[in-house]
Image (cartoon, rainbow over all chains, first blue to last red; front, top):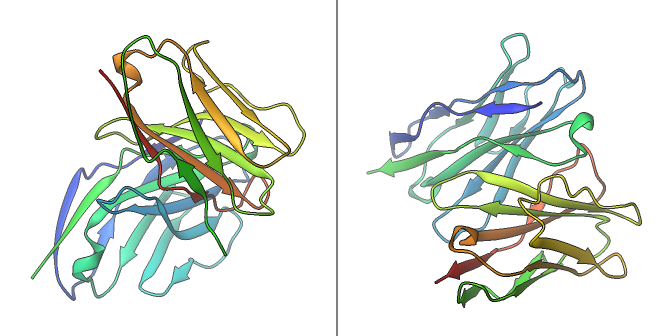
Length: 115
Length: 114
């Protein structure tokens, strides 16, 4: 079975600073994908970034980067130059061939960006 | 192009009534998923459709829950004899294909059972 663990229920960061949101995972599948989603107060789930288990490089998408440490089974999200609009819930999720393609989500981290 | 759409956006129903929630995926996406998000919780997988294959119903919490997908496009999630614990946001997602592709989510339907 797959499992995602997000140990930070809430995080604060000052505007323009960088912040790291932690995510660890557990799976026995050698092939899997890791995702981060943002959920603002409006409720929609917004796809941010994806990392495949065989990707050699860490994924980056604009101000988002994924710090993928395969041996440690961690996939932390780094947001650089935080903006007030980054305040939201952030969910780490994974998918694998052994799970019939359904996403397994962590419990989320609420990020609050302050002035 | 249009994203995933869901209707209604909000639904209040009395305990014991049946409800139907609708999802219209992104055009061309063959995979469709239903998830449930209870207050303050992460998302819980319910059911998955891929093309013409038999759906994966492994996440449905009880036989009161069912879903169908007509013509490989629109999907309807039905909850019979609703209970208060069914109150949650029901999210639909679609992806280009199954497996290691990002899923795009709709805005969700907030269901409240009184």
